[in-house]
Figure 1 (tube, helix red, strand yellow):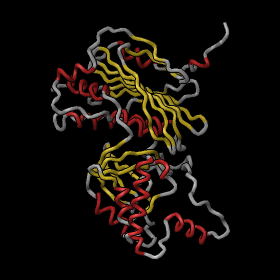
Figure 2: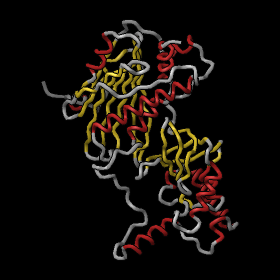
Figure 3: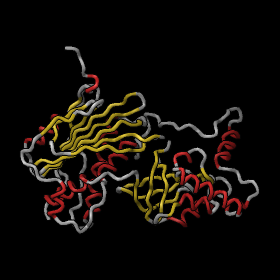
Figure 4: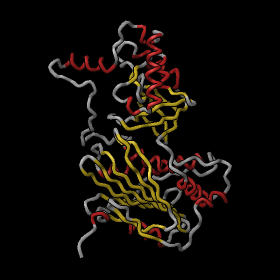
Length: 393
């Protein structure tokens, strides 16, 4: 099977609907009674159980809660339905093991409380389940409820802070703080999370044959191209007319933000553009560009392996041959990734406005060089948003 099948597999994956806000991975570490680390997209991802607050590790019952969580899910594959990124850059999400809600189980077993600071992110049904689970555990004196007056972890944290600084009046829930600009760029941000989700589209049946794969996006030779210039965005590009555009939600801090994707094909090349505006964490523009593009390419490789495990060549792609293409207040980098398993070219623009970062990323995967590759990348430029381009004649 040659590189053409590999490109067709990528096209098939990128044509699939983007999944909901979820990740799947094996639990490789239990950090505490409410934080775990899973292995997803070839990297560790920290997950904080949504709506759950277990005793602190230096608090009574903290080590018991951690061991109980480990007994439930350590070294097992879980689904994480996430609802945002916390201040320490871990995901906030419900953790499911074969359909069972582990957060609800921890609360029902008396190993944790319902967390009043983020239970509002749960659905009404899940919130009711969590609260009823806590009531049942308390009435049955399960776990930490065997104590006469167990101290909730948020009160324990507040008391510890006040003992160190009695003068300070601390809020019950500490404010989320961004890392200082000189700190290392966090591994997981809204940008890298979206890049991973774009690449990891819905799994394809392992029984799909070559004819079915190539039929997902029909081969187009010399097809019609059009100008893609989304309203309120600061970029434009020439793209194949037969492509498709989608939008979807991505968690960003304590809110959901909208991400957008265009993908299309002409001849033996696949063209992809995605764009998003979301929270920034003080990372440098160049670091944001490289981490987002790397996450996207890493996700492509993982998705290809999901399609036909062990049958397709391992997709690898390291960032190289970068060129500065900055313009109109945006930092821009272009990459010639000809050494990738599928030759790839990419151009990325980003800038920070207030507390948000705009990110525009265009990639083309190709098997044969043609004029459309340069045409696509060179046309991907920073422009004036359409809703501002209304000068009087």
